[in-house]
Image 1 (spheres, rainbow, N blue to C red):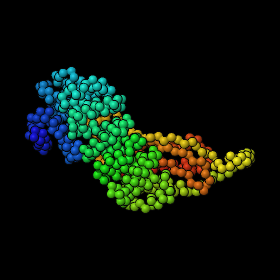
Image 2 (cartoon, helix red, strand yellow):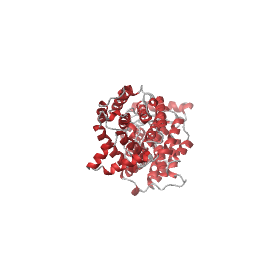
Image 3 (cartoon, rainbow, N blue to C red):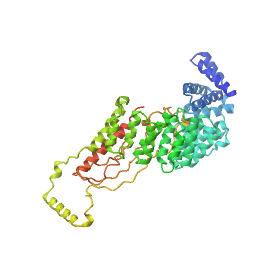
Image 4 (cartoon, one colour):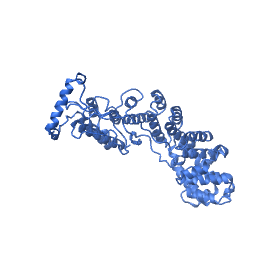
Length: 492
């Protein structure tokens, strides 16, 4: 009842806050800790999926900032008001306001150190923030700031000490269950666990997040971490476990997640995972084929290097272009161009026929010697062949030390676009095929599908400039790289 009365007062205050004198008087009558408590209650509603509370949060932050700037030393003699200042700062408040208000307060050295650490954190100085905040045990301070302190410390230590960061994020959840603090702690735990290779922790944190905070306005950031974690941990997490987690989502979110996993798996050459995710996205939860042109397009791209080229071309040709956005139509055109290039006959450059007579004589002698040796009778020509390159698994970096506080600075992006996924450019595995006759078709390399700068990892390290097969393969791979860029630019 007390919480309801506080938030009820805050809502009434917001309704009055239109610049009128009564609103200003009402704001001044409230203590800083009362305003901050109202902010926390609204944030908890946001974490539970109440997006309508976002404007209320913005207005309350504005009112708290004004109240803190006007607060004097007498106000901060009440310990709850100074702790409210710290919570405001760790909730994404104005660092200038926090620094100015703290300078007017007479508090103990530990509280002042927390204030300075929070200001450093908000100003993007993680090293200074860690130096001032790391010695302070979040469990030793009052719970109303302990949870925020643990969340900030965990975020700061994510890169340098991920094991300790996970422990601190657990403390944040323990001190503030069912709140935006827990939502942020779980979301960050997913990314850190994946970077650590801890599949069990990754699966547990993902399950807990989906069960409680799937409709948070920050859930798109969880989706980024989840998709990247599945790719990173593909050898340690089973497809059944992935299906268990996604089964708790609504069908549309589940389909988007599978589309993103299929594309990322195709980038890294994870054929089995890509096929699993593409099938899940295309068939849907009820097992029936989905008539979604976007799903058909992405599933076709995920199988471009494994299925028959004719099958892929036929599937691409059946996609209803009128139901695609312009960027997706461009992507479809690029995919069809690549498929057409694969089956197109290779033209032999005229200069390839103008080899010196002496070289021709040497090649004829070498061919005669090879044919005379029974051991070489069945070997294909090795001209232009390249050794296999190992697959490089793509993984997102661990949570940055400068991760915004409590996610309040993170833009609430809706989870609805598979092309929103923008991980670092990954190097797909590629194997240069042996030289073929002009009647054969070179294999296309696995596609990359992100907007990040494309690294031509699939290009040969050494090539014969006069080999028409090499030229055709290189041309096809360049067009695959164009697909990567278009896919990353696909709209919502």
